[in-house]
Length: 239
Image 1 (tube, rainbow, N blue to C red):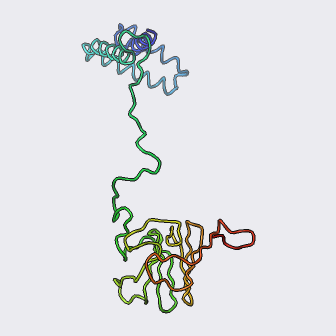
Image 2: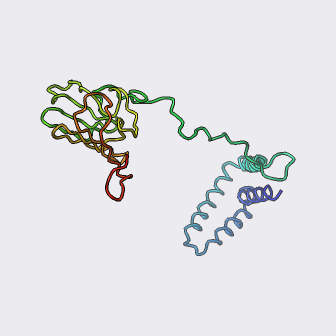
Image 3: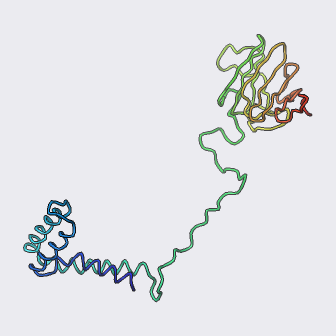
């Protein structure tokens, strides 16, 4: 086939200076060097050095030259055979590839590494990117942003392990799923409180939740949700 002929011809061209007579070797190497221009051309100088090395190698190890020629030809034939199946005139086609359709939309992971678990904060004092604090002089509030919650202490903590009294945005101190109801949060970014009123910037829900009175239980629903995406032209918030 054409591919095999080309490979074999290229191999013959490469090894011809090695297996020809001394006179023929000088002529062949000189001819190839002349293809690269003036005597000072770097490739021509390289080929001249190669010619001297070839002649020295021929005198010292003449038995290696035929063996090298045979090995080169066998390698070329072997490469050509791997490209074309036996009895076929066309290149070999790649085999079936493994499927990469491993996932589906919304597919849950099987394992969490370096975390307390799925929908698990690790406890009331395991924070994840806390981003805002507020106090009215009595209560102390902390936005635990990546846990989708606001922690509330009945009084400012006086020691590092003082647990919060309740949590907003989650039914307990372990859960951390986001949500869009008035009793859930999604990455709350800040919290403010004054005169018993609590306001939370529910960042990823694009809204502000307002409790008119201090919350008294876990996941207590907000009294007002100011949804920035659903404001009417008059400025009133839709239900």
